[in-house]
Length: 224
View (cartoon, rainbow, N blue to C red):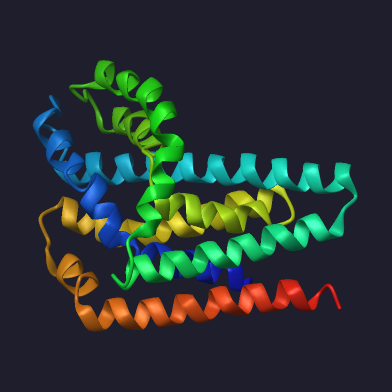
């Protein structure tokens, strides 16, 4: 099994508390704005999250394809190593964020704020949601919300070696966020409490920090 896919899934699970903080309230919006009462709320929430994961996969496909094309065009191996080191550093920053040691990762989110200003108005015509299927494009658009957690994971997609690998990494990340986002959307708080527990955060941070350092070590070692 590809360790990057496992790692991306793990990041999604451990970083879901951040997702809940940023997007969790949207579940209430979905519930209040769904006009078709014949369908249970869980269908709207599930398909909203599927749309969100599709957008993440598209991010990964674009970024993975773009960076492998740049690497091939430049014919510079050192440039690819530098990208892997950057990916490792971002993983370390993400570890600090998840463990609540340092919140500097939020500053990365300013990168996508201008794009989100253009995309967010597109979500309004979709409300109220007429059927659960309408939640898919709604979730797809909300997937573009600026998020340091997503941007950090995209660094893995950038050095994955292909567009398809980049898409798979981001899909694994999205699937990792799904259980907590779905259950909290239905009102279950057990995942939120567990993710926000200090011990969980510290263990997750240490594991992710170790992975980030390992990524940097492997990248530098390839220069020798």
